Length: 598
Image (cartoon, rainbow, N blue to C red; front, side, top):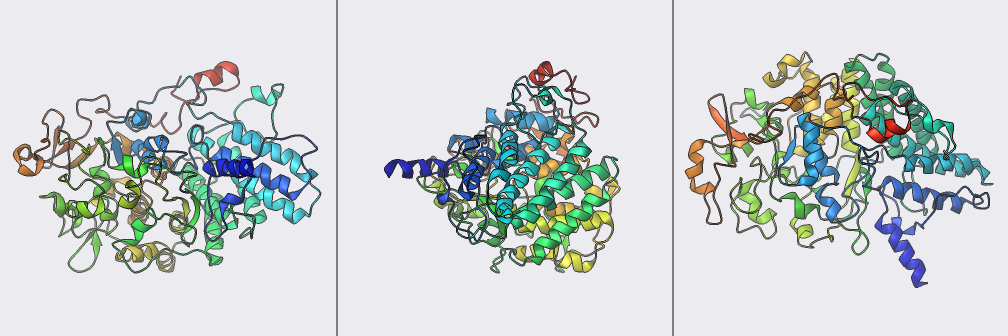
C-alpha cells in the first residue's frame, strides 16, 4: 500500500491543473503511452491514459502554455509564466541570465537555435494525443462516456497547435501517432490558416464533448475551460488575420463572441469581488487554494509536501522591474470622478515616486509595490528602503518599480520550494475582455456589452465605467484606431499583466514596433544621486549603473543604456514569428525557414 500511495503522490507532484468547483486532483493515477490492444478496455483505461497527457502538457522544460508556477523551486526563477513578460514592454530583467532569451526577443536580437527542444519544436505531447485518438474507440463503453475523454484530447491538441502557430506560423499538421518510418516525418509545413481551421474544429469538439463537471472523477478540464480556450483562440486568430491582412477574419471573431457568450450563459463563473477594490484583484494571485474561486476557470494546483514553487522568493529579487510604459498605462482618477490617461490628467505628477501611485487605478498598487506599505507587504525586507535602484545593495530594481503581483509574505516565509499558492491559467475576466474586443473589432459592440464585460471588471477595481466614446489617449493617437479599441486594449494590458498574454497580444495586433521603444524606468533626476532616500547605509545609488535619459525636460532611468539591449529593433518582416531550429531543417529539407531568419 505504501508504494501505491507514493506513486500517486509522484503523479500529484507533476499534475497540471485544476478546474474550480471540482474534486481533488489527487485521485489521478500514473499512466504510460500505450498502443497495446490489451490496454484499451475500460473507462479507467481512458482516464489513466489521459493523465499522461495532462502531465506531459505540464512539462515546463518543453511547453510554455500551461506552466503556471512551474514544476519546482528552481524552475520558478525562470520558467514561471510570470517571467514571460520580460519579452514584452511590461517588464525587464537584467541580472538573471536565464531570462536572456526573453530579453533577446524583446530587443529584436533573437538568434536561430540549433536544438529543436530549446527552440520550442517539441512534439511528444502531440504524439500522446494522437495515440489516444488512434485507440480510444476500441473501448467498449457508451459513446457519450468515451467522448468525454476525447474532449480532453481535443482540448489539449487545440492548445498545443495554437502555441505552435503563435511561435512559427506554418507548422506540420499531424493527426496520427508517427513512427520512425512515417513519411509525415519528412513532410512540409501546413499553412497556418489551414492549421487554425483544424484548431477551431478541435476546440469545437472539446466544447461539445466535455462535461460541465466530472462528478467524482477528479479535477479535469471541463466545458467551461474549453469555451474559455475557444474564446482565446478565436480572438487571437481573428485579430491576427485582420491586422496582418490575411483575410477571412470575421468568422473567428464571431466564434470568439459565441464562445464567450456561451460561457457567460452557463452562469457558473463570475468576477471575484468582495467589495474591497484595494485587495480583491491581488487575492486572485495570492490564494493558497483557488478551488472555490468562481472567476478561475482553470488553474495549476500546488500542495504542500507534493508540489511547491518559489515565485515569491524570486519576485522581488535584484535586477527586475516594471517599465515606465507599463505604469503609465494605468488611468488616473480625476477630481470629477472620471478616469483619464496620464497625458490628460489634472492629478498626475511624478515629482516624487509616491505621486506616481496616487489617484490611480487601484490595481496599480496591487501590482507595483507602494513603498509606504513595504513593511507590511514584504517578508524580511523591513530593513530596506524602497524603491531600490542599482547600487542600493539587495533587492534592487532595474526600473525602480518592484512588481508584487503574486507576492504574499505568508508564502515567502515558507522558503525554497514550499510556496503553494495556485496559478490561474484561464480566468473569467479574460473571457469578458475577449468578448468586448471581438465585438469592438466587428463593429457590433454596444454600451450594454461594455457594461456586462469591461465594466464588471472595473467595478471590482472601483474604477469609473468605460463608455462607447472615451477620450483618445495622446500616447496612442497615431495608431489609427478608435479610442474605444485603445481603451479595451489598455484594460487587457492592466488586468492580464504577467499572465503570459501581452506578447501574443502585441503580435496579433501587429504592434511589435512597440518592443523597439527605449525602455525607461522611474523618474530619477541627477540630484537624486545625493538624495538621502537613495543613499541608505547599506549602499547608495550608483551613477555607473543607474543611467539616465532625458524626456520632456525630466530624467528617467535608462534601463539598458550601455548594454547589448540598448538599441532595440523590431523587423516587421521577420519578428512576428520565431526561427525554425537549424537541426529541424537539417533533418527535413521540406521544412523551410521563416522569412528573414536565413
